Length: 255
Length: 264
Image (cartoon, rainbow over all chains, first blue to last red; front, side, top):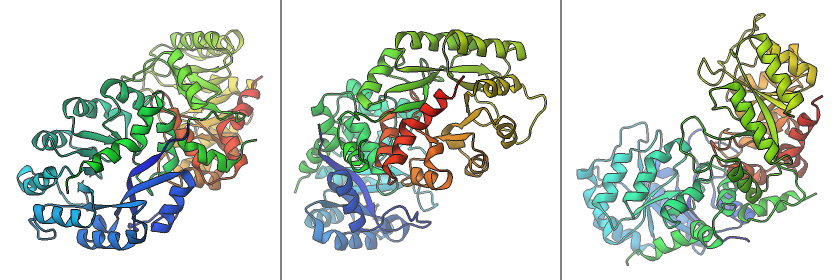
């Protein structure tokens, strides 16, 4: 059986120390999607966390404009207190106006100590939660702060949270409880290589909270696809992971 | 033989790999060093191999605290699935000296049908420590000599030095996880009896392509390190790689088949 794939986690734009084997342009992304049979992707721009968030989001919209049938923008967001971003409600209104249905938030990046501070993020996260816009969260340099994730999920139960990449098998004991406790917590497949990991997740929690994402161009696309396509679960569950769950989350965004 | 572009297209399907020989060169059975595992039985592992499209699995029981018990467990898997399981003999660095090592290797190869070796340091913390010298009193000397006599391949996590591989040209040496240290791997790869397995290597795009360029596809082995990780993920990495069709065939099975067939 051939599955339909919808990638929740793709990137364009170059990063420092760029690996020349990894694509940076829309054309390269589309070629890779065609090569593997990935129908659609949600995309963010590398400038957002290596240069300037707003410039990166603007550049993203410009680059994706001719391909909005297949490529969907994800804006990187941050709290408003440095004035780099407008206040949460205004930012979310702009996103909806421009057809953005997914937000991304980075912690522990830029060599700085950007951590989750509940009181600093309440306006932004509250605005996202109000329209149920999925928020992908990535911890760049070390393992996620599990208690912070739990705090966000508990405080904003209508806000779908997607951890970009759960990565190591050794982390399963940490994020399995999040899936069990919080229906709004989701985990991305990028880089996940747990032994029968998808089977275990489906068996314990059902397939709904697993979101297909490749982390293109950092990770190779085929390795994640293969794990989903060849999981020992019914085809309908694999299809939910490959595309259906993400599509459902995006469809629930109000406005 | 199957076309490479078809393999790329198949990343998104559950179709069988048909006539492509796939041997997972780096597998474990039973408990895995205290980690959570949804499945540890050989029956479950074979079920996954069927779904993923793996013909044969090279299995050791590295997490077991006792050498003989580990090898007997693997022997049981071989008896249960003789066409699917290749036994990889567990040799403990400090298992009791030269006679014990050689006796266990002889038992495993001659009585139980094992066709490969994995070195373990149960006393020192699982994987033997990487060394950068050659030691005339190397506690694993009996194992190197046995492998030399039999033409066997030894799965090494560290420990292996250029000098060891050079002194035993009749043995083959597999650098688990492509050694994890690029400079060391490239140095060892200068010798024709060294191989790199791709289990638990970097997941970054282009990793396998780079390995092929630097040491050649004929020296790379598909391996998953199951149940530490899922074999479908690594299989997809090979299927999706931008390398020629023949290179994928070598990596996925033919190279490992050659190492197994080399055993006398």
